[in-house]
Image (cartoon, rainbow, N blue to C red):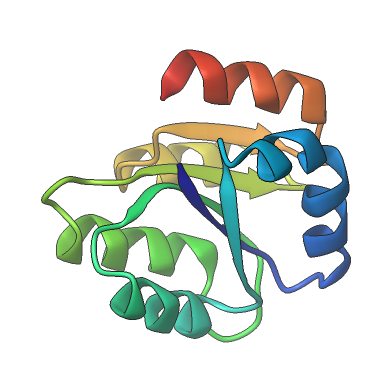
Length: 124
């Protein structure tokens, strides 16, 4: 399963690689990383319709995660990837915006990686 993680905090890549080490080694999950919405769109173009899941931060400089979500839902419909929004701000406005734009889940930071693994198993 190919997963794209989008977050302007570069330490998130290390965290995902550490926390999903066994899933990566076994080949069950393959992670790709982008540090901005525009970089994520480039990665998506290079891997046309290969991603099953996109994990995106909401608050990023330049293109926000909500803008990225909107683009993904418009351009990648066959088959549509699941998009989980990640944010340090679990406020009602961001939640409502994400859901109205088609987010499949809304997860607050700091991430509980065990809970995230369970969500991935049950969702995908």
